[in-house]
Image 1 (cartoon, rainbow, N blue to C red):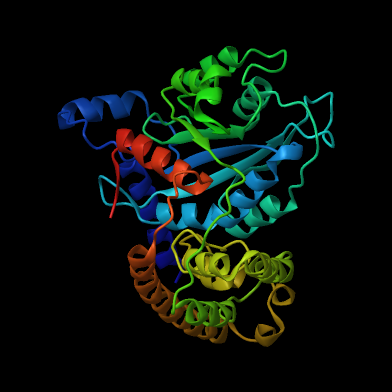
Image 2 (tube, rainbow, N blue to C red):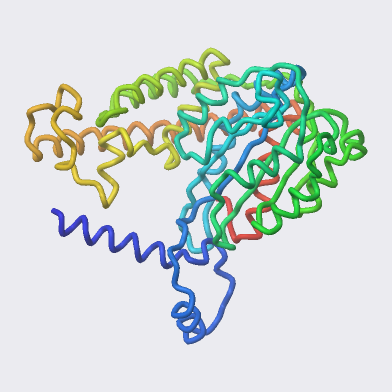
Length: 391
């Protein structure tokens, strides 16, 4: 079995080498030229991962923005799950979160806090969003931009997509740190900065939010952050929520954080449901996608990792139902849960197609004023430059 795992690891290594150019497969150089370049510059390459940093103003007036972020995270994840590279591979997604402009934060740090570094743990991202509260403060856009550019481990592969979305409603020029310096640093790192002004479009232009985007080739957008998010209830919502409950039973926790992560999963389900049933449905759809992967604490997801060995898990790190079992018995149990999960995820996806068709037929309200729509438009536009496409 270890031989098979080693072959799997070798296969992943080969796959990584084939994605050196990530989604940018339009560079048609001769094989000899490519071999010559490879022999000169062989370095470890990042996997095909899109990085997005979300910088949110959490001053007094931003409750509406935070609520939109909480409820629409799953729309963004679900849309991104359909992204495809020119070579038919699927990119991973990492999201980082900063808050700024809140008096509860340290004045010495410029009222800025890294809430979450780059993470692909969707439960953790949701948890951090729900932890945000608002309070009056000074909003320093240049400072939070520079902080995120300096602190986060941005990948260096020029063919991978790196984006910042900064949202707020005070002048972009506030603070001692010149935003133009931060944007120059963004250009050096090939990070595209997109600005979202929470208010009147023309006012955002006058207060330099548009200029803040244009200096890195990003998008300037204005939204009504206090606009109530309208979710259309469909005949398929209840079924998807019930399937989500069944889906949770397929998770097999292990390791030091296994049990706490199972609880966290349930808490984020509850948070979504408390906001609105439709938000819980969207989260369930995200959990049925490839982007919801919990291999660090779930044996089923870990089992698909070529580098993972079930034998490496100590008996006391297993859930009670598997303690004392031999490796074959554990493997059989995990495989049965894996098959069960795949069937449930397939059902959720099928009902979601019907749900989306129903929404499309009954959608009347304009969504241009919402955070999710603004972000998705920018992501798709900039992803094209790296040869991403959507099905």
